[in-house]
Length: 186
Image 1 (cartoon, one colour):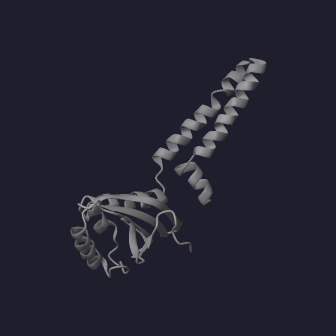
Image 2: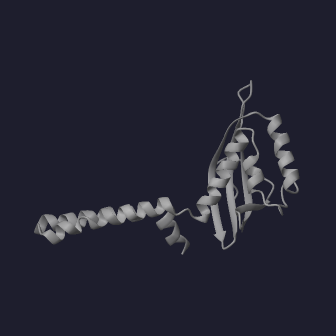
């Protein structure tokens, strides 16, 4: 089910390839026969492709919502704001940094000490299970510094819960310092 959901709503690329091949086959049939029926059949794959693309644009899956939330948190943190973090942290949060208020205070304190040039998400894996989800994410933080700065990679494991207001972060494990591309396996 997850594979079908991903293919239809998140990444319809393989379906587009199949439809392109089908279009070529129908075109070859049309070249051989030159009938009206074959000419009309040429319209079917592009119509289905358009419907699939429209569906992928309209439907936002839980995985995409979580990915957007994490990107928004990273963008806000880079811009020296914690609005997105405060929004997406659950009131019952308990994990890295303590409770919600303690983690926000830690983030504000840490952000003030280190001017950030960019935050890039290099790996983002989301596993959803009903009203729960787990995210494995790697971020690369590049610091601004008079001496050239530095880049640091962090691997995070984040537990989510779906509330009435949307997906919220319930728990974050302490981040692991990693070399991007060489994240520890589970």
